[in-house]
Image 1 (cartoon, protein in one colour):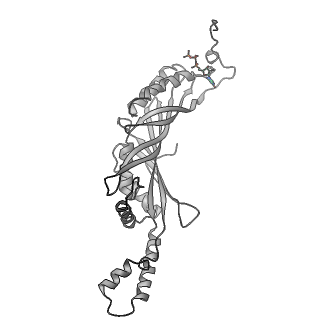
Image 2: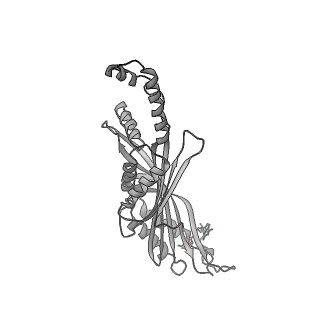
Length: 298
Ligand SMILES: Nc1nc2c(ncn2[C@@H]2O[C@H](COP(=O)(O)OP(=O)(O)OP(=O)(O)O)[C@@H](O)[C@H]2O)c(=O)[nH]1
């Protein structure tokens, strides 16, 4: 073992002077607890280098401070404590500290009708910064849902009406014959197109609130859209899903407006930006809508 004192290059003066806006590490593997579940996450940890003469920051001090996040439910006070530790361990070097945590929240979601449930992942990134003004926190979250095209539904209904006119020329039409026709393939000879869709949210959190509103946001978004992707599904659930889609026909504009209003009603948000993406089955391209409230792109 080397008994000589270890040279500390980071502490030596830099030959080229200059401050740096961000220095740190990206892609650090880190176990987190989100909504009660242990998940594998990735952290980006950094500080500003505000001493123009200092050669480097102390990467190990940032890395070790992350251990605080390991076994406790992820919350804003916890992140604030880690960012404070970044700054305290870089006194005289850094005025701003940064921490991004990226992972997939794992939530148990109930079936629509049956007593079953299953797991769904929701990709998220929590982007936090600590500076002289305090803590700034942005939560990005993606929620999948189903969207059925209202135009396609109207066109399909028109075809069904035409088929009815052609098939029922004889009068009188009986209730039984119409009922049998409706239950046949001929009764639903055209179906609207629907697609798996994504809502991507970025919300600026009120740093005075402790809990991360991840579960509350997922619940609010899925309720507003009405057509959440399902986990465990029996036929009774599939039928309820078909009904939910029929009752919630949506262009991407409709989905974006629904979410805008739902997020405006969510307590603890200081602003948001949202983007909905309908991966059209009609086209090989996507239909996209965006909306913001009290938001400036970073
Ligand atoms: N600043 C900096 N360090 C790097 C970089 N790449 C690797 N490191 C290494 O990160 C390691 C940890 O740095 P420090 O936190 O300063 O380690 P230390 O000097 O043993 O720890 P302290 O005594 O707390 O300062 C060092 O061995 C550096 O060489 C880099 O690009 N910049």
